[in-house]
Length: 536
Image (cartoon, rainbow, N blue to C red; front, side, top):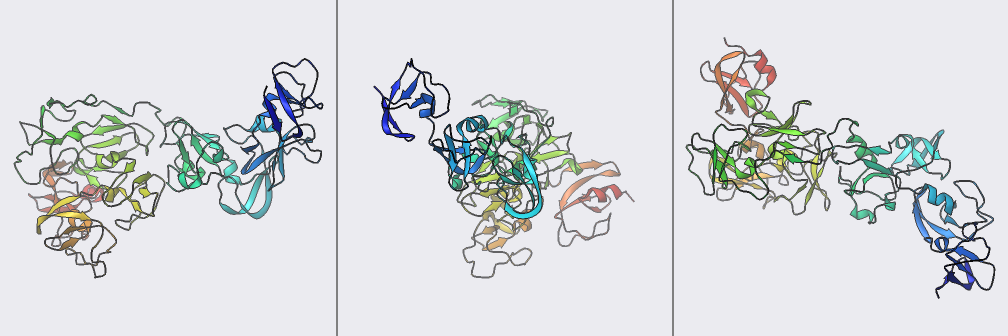
C-alpha cells in the first residue's frame, strides 16, 4: 500500500487507490475525483494522482526571471493570467514579485515556443531593464498585461521563429532560456558572438543542434524565408570516397591526369606552390607529369559544392577568380589571391579556400585555448590590432579576451625571405619585450604584443605585412591579358624604388603591382587604374 504525506494536507497521510467508487472533489484542481487518486481515510480530502505529483517549483515562461513555488488554495490570491481567485485549486507563487498563476493557466501557457500573451505600450519614457534582452533602456516600454513582463518595444517585435545563415534549422524564440537549457550561465555562449548568455533572459534556440543565440545576434544574421538552401548535404561532388586514397586521378580543373607522390618532389624552379592553396608544396601531393603542376592531397579532395555559415547559398569551387588576372577577392580576409576559391556568382560572394576551410573551432599555435568563429563580433585582432577586414567576424577565445581575424589566422607559419638565408617563423610573443622592438624592413617600431616573423639565428624580426605583404597568395610572374592592353601583363612586387602608377600618377602604398615588360608600364592593382590604362 502506497502512502504519502502531501504539503497541502500535512495532518494525515494519504493512501493511493487505483479504483474509487465514491464521490469527491480533488482539492488540487477542484474537479471530480476519478481513479487513480490519493485519499485521506480520516477526512474528506482527495487528490488526483496527477495533482499530487505536480512539481513543487517550476520555471515558467510567463514569469521567466524567478522560480515559482506550488501553493495550496488561498482566498487572498488572484491568478495573474485568468484573473480568477486561487481559492479552489493549487497555484504557483513568486515570493519576490507576488506573482501568481493557477495550475490550469500554468499548464496551458507554459510551452516552449515563446510567450503567449499580448503586450500593451507604456507611452511614458522610463528607465528600466528589458526583461527579454537584459539591456538597460531609457525609453517607452511595453508590458504584458497578464504577467507584467516589462520589455523594450523592439524586443516585442522579434519573430517567433527565425532563419539564420549559421544554422540549418529554424530557431525558436524562447522567453526564458533556463526553461530549455539545463546549464549555468557561465557555461552557455552565443554561437554568433561567443559572448556569455544569461539564461534568465530570452534568446533564439534550436533544440535539434543545441544552437543558442542572443536576440540581437540572431537578428543581425537573419535571412529571408526563401533565401537559404536547406540542404542536408554539406559537401557534394568530391572526387574521393571516404577513406580512399587514389594513386591517379582526373581533377575538375586540370587537363591531365595527376599522380600521387608521398615524397618530396624536385621542382623546376624555387618556391613552387600548390595550385589550390598557393602555399609551399609538401607531401602527400599530386603532380602532373606533363606540366609543372602541383596540388596538395587535401586540396585535391575539396568538394565541388560547400555550404558556409556566412552565406545563405551553396558555394561552388572554382580554380580562378573574377578579379584582375584571375585573382579572387575574399570576403573574409579581403585579400586578393590566386588558387582555388568557393564562390556564389549570384551574390558576387567568394572565399579563398584558406578562409572557407578554416574550422569553426580553431586550434592555433599562437594561442593556448580553442578559438571559436564569432560571426557577429567586431573585436580587434590581438595579432595585428585591427578590426575585422570583412563581414565574417573573428575567432574568439571563451577563456580570455583574445581575438584573431581571418587575415592573421591564415598567415603562413614559415616563410622564405630574400634578405635572410634562414626560414622566418611566425612568432607570437617577444622574449625581450622590455626593449624597444623594431621592424628591420620598414625600420618602424613594432608592438611587442603583436605577432611578427623572426629568425633567431640572425635576430631578424619584421612585421607580417613587411614580410608577406598585403596579398601573400598572389602568384608573381604569371602572365595574363587585359582587354585594353595588347601585351601580356604580370604581377610583380612593388619595392621602395618603384615609380608612381602610370595610370593615376599616385605613389604606391600596396605591395603588389601590375607590370608590362614590353612597354615598361607599372600600374596599381586597382580596377579603377586598369580601366583607365591604355597603351601609348
